[in-house]
Length: 317
Image (cartoon, rainbow, N blue to C red; front, top):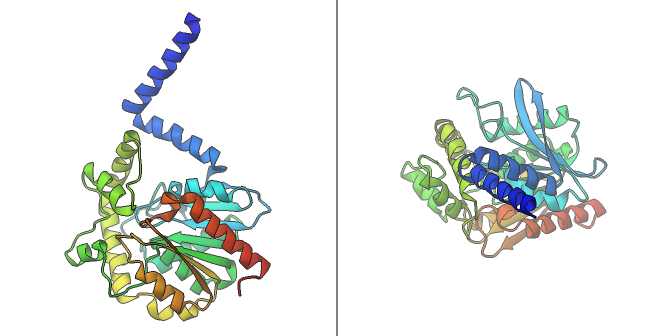
């Protein structure tokens, strides 16, 4: 009995040490557990001298779904939702160049969404993915639009989750901040993590302290690069090269998902997409912010799965 109690105590102490003293180890272990429970595993490929870390899971003979993260994001933002997809679909979730654990973070590179779409195309074809469904959140949604325009034959369907690239008269806090020369997505001090978690979601995302510490260290390390991308590329692209007048060029069956409480990109953008895209269906989530795949992973996955089934069966014209 005493031996069992000693083992239990040792496990508890080890857990507390990992939590407080070794947060990177704690995060790595927890992240690995979440990935396994969602049926995905970490892989890597080098394409055109760029290292692409990515998560992959699901049956190899199922239709492939590619999930594309937004600005400042990374592949594991999709992990919970992916767990609902890997039961029936082959899932690929990459870190885009400039973000996450990608090997490409040079300030001399262009991170324009059209360029990122070209890189994504090269990466997917290099790992043997040539026909697939694509889903993108925020900046990732804009990249999905670029992909649909440039490489339409690759796509079975597209899902846009609170995507960038559309402008309306309704201004959000992010846009007002931009006009004042501020990047509200930037992380400079540890408290910015709590601010960002509250900003992105309608209900602040619950993140353990060790995760916040690691998140801050990663974001801080890339602060200058991400500010450069935000101000010199994404902001300019949004103002001067929005997709409002190009939507008619996209004929890929498209599911639009938006949260009513998005403080970054206004929900009226969904109306522009619905009216402009020739083959679109729109779903609006109440009490949801900018990242529905994290706020409501099962509900979001159910909508995506239902839409893909309709496209596969020919029920969606």
